[in-house]
Length: 137
Length: 137
DNA sequence: CCTTGCCTTCAAGTGCACATTAAGGTCTAT
DNA sequence: ATAGACCTTAATGTGCACTTGAAGGCAAGG
Figure 1 (cartoon, rainbow over the protein chains, first blue to last red):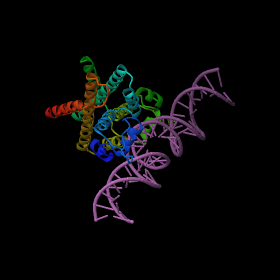
Figure 2: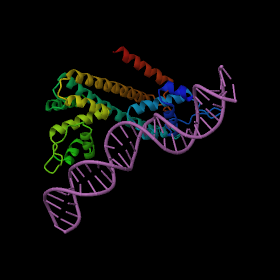
Figure 3: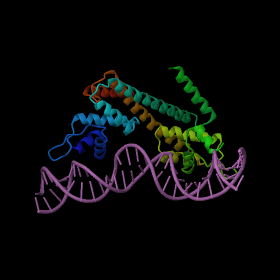
Figure 4: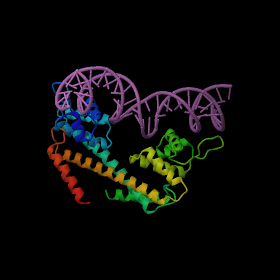
C-alpha cells in the first residue's frame, strides 16, 4: 500500500504520516526498490493508535516517549503498564471535565438566562453536582 | 481586584486575561483612575466560563462568535440556544471519542501484549463496542 | 531619591503540529 | 517523448493561543 492509500484508509494526511515516522511515533516504514514507502497493516494499526491518543489530547512528545519504551526490547512491562495507567488517568480526568462542561451547558439550556454569565445559582448547582459525583465514588 | 489577584483566582495568566479582553471573550473591564483594570466577580465568572469552554476544545474564534451574540441586546435566544446545542453536540462527541480511547487503553491493560500495536482482536473488540453503542442509541 | 512591585500598551516571539513548497525521481498512458 | 499522477527529501510557512519583551507610569518603603 502506498502512502496515499494509507492516508485514505486512516484519514491521516501523507505529510502527517511522514511526520509521525520521522518523530518515531510509528516504526520505520519499509521501502520499495525505488524508495517509496510500502505500508502494511501493522503500520496502519500504529497510525490508528497514534490518532486515537492524539484525539485524546496526548502530545507528540509524550506519545513518542512511551512508544519508545514499547519498542525497546527490554522487559519494561511494569513501566509500560504504569505509563498506560497514567495516560488513562489523564484521559478519565479529561472526560470528567468535559462531562462537567456538558452538564454546565445543559443547565444553561434548561434555565436559559438573558445573559450567559455563570450565575451564583449555577455555581451552586455545579458544586452540588460535583459533591454528588464525589459521593458516588 | 487587580489583574494579578484575578489571575491567581482563576488560574489564567494576566497576559491571557488581557488577551481575552482584547479578543472580546470577556466584557471590557472597568479601570481605576490611573487606568488599571479593576476586576469584579462578574468578570471572574466570565473568565471561568471561557476556561471551561477552552478546556472542552472550543476555539477562541468560535467562542467569540457566540459570546458576541449573547452580549448583543437583540433577542436572539433561539440562535443562542442553537449555538449552545451545537457546541454541546461537539463536546458529547469528544467525550465519546475519549471514552473509546479509554476503553481501548483498558483493553490493552487487561490483555497486555508484548507490543502495543492494535491487534486484530482489539480492532474486533472496538468494532463490537461501537456496534453496541449504536444499538443503545 | 531610588528600588521594588505592581500596572499599562504594543509589538514581536514561541511552541506545537502539522501543511506547503521546491526540486527532483519513477511509472503509466497516449 | 511528453503529460499526469504518484512518490521522495529538506526546508520553510502557517495558524492558534498565548508569552515575552520593551518602554514607561504610579505608589509605597528604606
